[in-house]
Image (cartoon, rainbow, N blue to C red):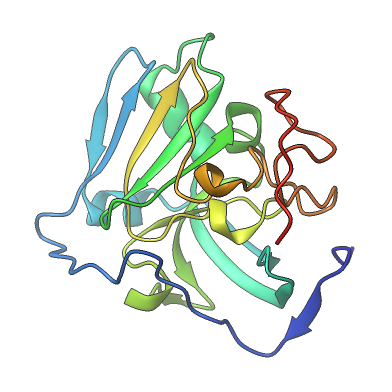
Length: 197
């Protein structure tokens, strides 16, 4: 199903709101923290060994472009959540990146069937401009939720703005509901401010 008011392009347009960080893969870790029973961290090689999802899904940017039929490989976030014992009162997930970028999604979206920590794209490891070594990918959410250079997944009770949410972008960002800005249909927090861009 095509996404409303998106145009398909042949290749990705790359953004790095806070600049592209340097990644030392030997020191890099993915930490799972917050409202969990057993905080854990994973090395890159550990995550690679855990890959359990491979599928083809479109990528949608909130600015209006999409890339069709991208092959993704990674680890289901809900499987990681099961390993750490996410508490029932965790309602939101914060994705934090090596450059300081953050994005926020409702826990129900982060724990959906297709939500993954993506490690490979189109048969190859993510390259640096695509978010190496890891990024979350949730196909039904806009791409700004897919924080590149992922270092931390935090489960939390309370909503807080990430980088773009602080500038008026939507708390959830569902592509098919066109949740681009706060105050639009489907909002989770009941805020009414609407940003026109």
